[in-house]
Image 1 (spheres, rainbow, N blue to C red):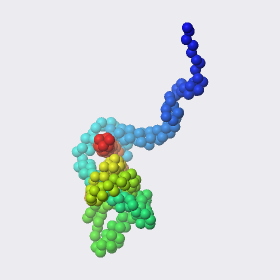
Image 2 (cartoon, rainbow, N blue to C red):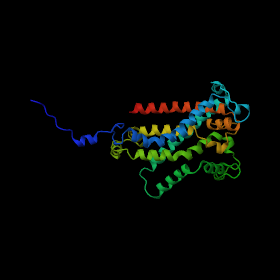
Image 3 (cartoon, helix red, strand yellow):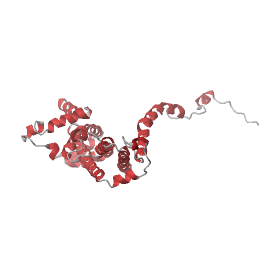
Length: 310
């Protein structure tokens, strides 16, 4: 007996992806999806990928802003990188940068941001609005405006802080320059940590905290055993972002210009002085490439911690 086959269902034929396209969850296909992301990829290529490749290229040249090296730059290979490894100024800036990141990002913004988020988590009304408004205002103001406000606050002769403490003539930016820029950056960047931790604390089940209280756990034990395990991923993500932002921050230059005596000359300021003020673009580009590698190492470290948590 001959086997008969039924004709294919037209609906099935219509659902078959056209040639050149592949089905996906959105039903767009690879080509159509690629067309949607192409503008974003073009912007990334123009403003991120190309500048990064250009900086790497400049780091291999003796390029300068003026002189013969500006018109006819020559390939010097790794000479700029070897120069950086033996440059006391580079190592001084590296140490200062890690101090700046540790003080203002890892300790300052994380601790202050979490403290504010914890204290405001159950607050309602004007107090919470005022605190959040002041903190966020410090974050959205331009860096130049914030630096001007802090200069007025820390000024030796007519500074607001000296007037409040009753110690006229005390030079904060000269006697405690690193502490000054750490406090400046902590105040300026705490808003991000506060908002991130505020959202994270909202996901902690209240029943868990109530059970811990009924079991006799103290406030610190509730944080250690209930809150921190729930928001550990948020903490690591926040540390990654603010560490990278602070490592590359140029804001302290507006406050101290790297002084006094290079005591606040972090790497971003050192690159600016080397590449633009001194005109040695090749050496400045090499230092920028080293900074990029340090950022990659820091990012990989945090990402491994996140992966281990999962």
